[in-house]
Length: 300
Image: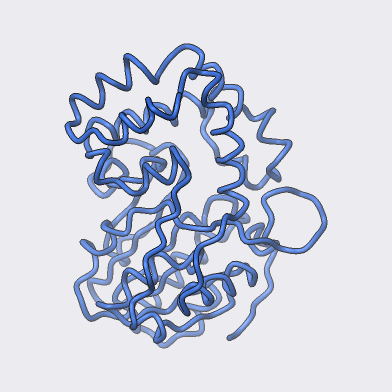
């Protein structure tokens, strides 16, 4: 493994601004890998952000996968998962569990959630959501928990500066968009979000072949031969990245991209406008404002 130091907030392995050792931030990934499976033709060499390892493991049977992460603790966790270790709860899961602990206070009883999660028809889901779950008490609680004032107690400034205003309202709209489009019952990402289930399938045998690299993605790609990757799935690494990193990352991707290579990039930001290459509505995780899927050579 190679290591490259930067001033990137992700490198610290912490969401807060406190001093201390890095942590596992994500016990699982909240990114619908079906986006990548559809976007990348089988057989190519793919660069992905390691994170909790979910995307790398899903792509490994069809691709040569290089998994990069700037957080060494997260990278070691992904390596253990490739070897068969069960998923654990990271900082993100503990934050969501804290939020779910208040669910009964807003009328989200376990029986009601189970009934909602078993629905399959989007029209029935929207009706149930409107009548039973998207209540005034729920909206007030989410708006308070996702206010910048509340988030400052848990997140350092780089992880807040890019968030849209009125985040609670934005996230409710994204959820409703997903309920109107995707079957709840067939959606493991929704179960992870609403009841904290950590899907823990055994890694494919090809997971042993995933190459792990400790580096920021741009530095790693700058060192690679030109035209050496057919695909890039970059998670939301630009959320919280330092000024100038986007330009450097996109230049590095273009350098390493083969002709017609595809790049996938997510963000919690609101999209700048309608875009034919924003597939956020297709992502069953329902969290993202942007899921940008386009040819690498067309990146800004």
